[in-house]
Image (cartoon, rainbow, N blue to C red; front, top):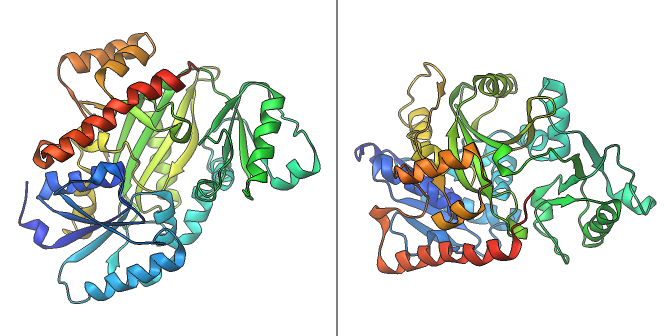
Length: 412
């Protein structure tokens, strides 16, 4: 731990969830830094922590409320000699930074893409067009508009069932609610597709919906790639993770709860080339799935930030905070891309759930070996930040997963 460097910078994290805690822990492990976090509310993962101070603001997730607070912070830190690194830890905050990057950059370091790139990549419909342009594989896809649903009672699909259905604009989708709402759906009939589409648009959603041919296989076919691209568009680090299990809760579908390290040079080179060609900046988090029908890893989406499970990178020996500090604080010149080979299993649920719900096979055997050899860890259990209240809180967060899996888990 290099505590001298922490006098030169301050992390300003946006949010208060597990992603925020993972970044705060990364900064603390590397430099002993206490992070400041600002969000619309206080969430459990950051409660009772002494490594991150959470400040909540009403209306902070809306453009006006966000910029009001950020201008106050710009004034507060006006004469502070430290470099202030602004780190978004959610899609909404990433979008708010990119839209206001020119003004925010007058005082803060903003390691994100610009607004135009954000619009091209964050919206899933636009992202698939970008994949097409750069030759990146993605699932067979139909883009469905509100107008298509309102004109016809049933939208004809160009592929068979099952299908995956999800919103193109995840930020707008957060603001609507309807019975049976999920982050994403796996559907097995035309009737189900028609029913969900009607509910989505009746609830007030206006953007496109993405319908895709479902790639066979369970969560163990998924891969997640984390990358860091510096201010000069050099890819400094790439870490490939092999998810083994997802959260089955409807509002959390797609959130990984177990990831072991993986390595694939073809995938690394493909994504590295893409990020450099589009002149990307900051953290990137890709979700993809292996399709045994043609032997390709097909992209689902890119998050323009580190993800809620990206602490697996720090856990595996490649501290996320160090890449930001070396790039913007120490200004360490780029030398070569690090293709990470992690050595630990990241877990977000109790061990008992891993043993019961990960599909049988070589992947599970390998995961059980990590557990047996004590080569595993998680984001929230950090011995340097544990007191009685926090210990009980984290225990409860993990305990609640037992009921969720009993109620919601279905084999894909």
